[in-house]
Image 1 (cartoon, rainbow, N blue to C red):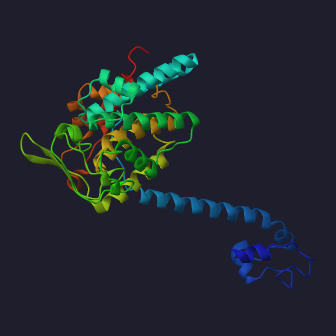
Image 2 (cartoon, one colour):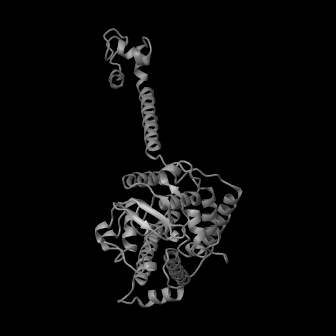
Image 3 (tube, rainbow, N blue to C red):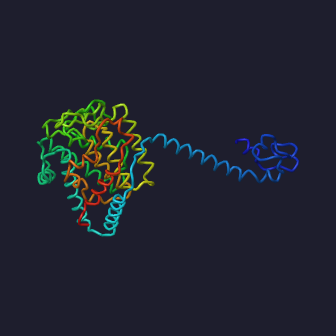
Length: 373
């Protein structure tokens, strides 16, 4: 290809063309240009040829890049776009469009967001088993006491990172990636689990004895704290989800060695499909798959729900800072875990997992987060 550029320079004269003493192209040139073009033809051919070669190279590189991304992102979720899912998406988009058309005074928006943050804090921690009622949560957020129990610390942690996220969303300075997930998990488990596991993938097994706590180890029910070294880290141990009623394990998440790979695949899938898949479908897939991977020692559910808010805002659905979709799921926690969770060994079921029913349920929550709108 390089020879073409050199041989395709301007002809000096009809009898002394560059690259040929007799006015004819060399064998190497003929291979690309055709047999014995005239000097004039050779003089005019370089520009379109270079354009052709450039385009060919560009599309070749693009093809191999897409092929690389395709092979890298082996995560290819199965789902069906049902009538119910389409209807839910339509209603959510209508809700968002109506809200975007309305004009609220700044003081009203601030109050709406403050209220939503309190409800989301209550609902998301309650899903994990936090016993504090909404009235207590609001009081804690208002007074921010110093000497507190674990349940109160959990509430303060969640509210703090939620506020920080909302500020970043308003400034458009946050995007979903692996580092963000680690950052969120570290914040929400602050002072609740050991520090040495902060900001890392899990390396030790986690045992979950309450079917409601498939998403994370819940400290409040047992009234015990996890060690500080487990805070802000993706799990490094296998996880076993047990049902205490029947005394059997109901879910074996992926092995420790596979967690980094699965996380990378999920992030790549999200990045490559942001402008292809509907935002609600993509956010729903992200939500459930992160729960299935169960990457952290603790805080998986809370991290997932916060990251879902960010992903939705990143894709243009930026009104959920004013409402709490978590509250919908908290109204029937058993149903939430039934829909988002799975049963069995991850390696036996991951190829047959279908996200359709979860996506219908997930969008139900989005649709009903603001019933009065």
